[in-house]
Image 1 (cartoon, rainbow, N blue to C red):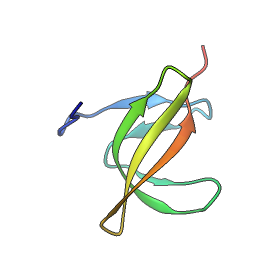
Image 2 (image 1 turned 30 degrees about the horizontal axis):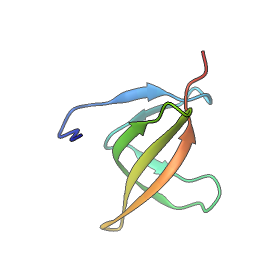
Image 3 (image 1 turned 90 degrees about the horizontal axis):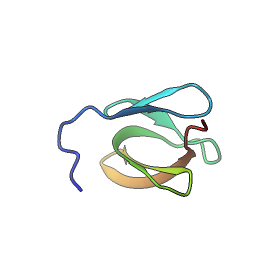
Image 4 (image 1 turned 60 degrees about the vertical axis):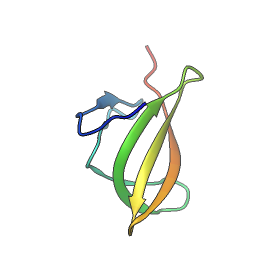
Length: 66
């Protein structure tokens, strides 16, 4: 699935809005990059593709709980 230039946003359990193009810092490793894609999995984990200095890196964040 290609997200193209669509603006995709959802809310994680920490009440922070995640959006494509936004800077994001990973919790454990402290690596900062720009969000390129957000993939919401049914398991309750959101996979986030980051651009870190021109290299792609996947990370994860908890999904919204209802």
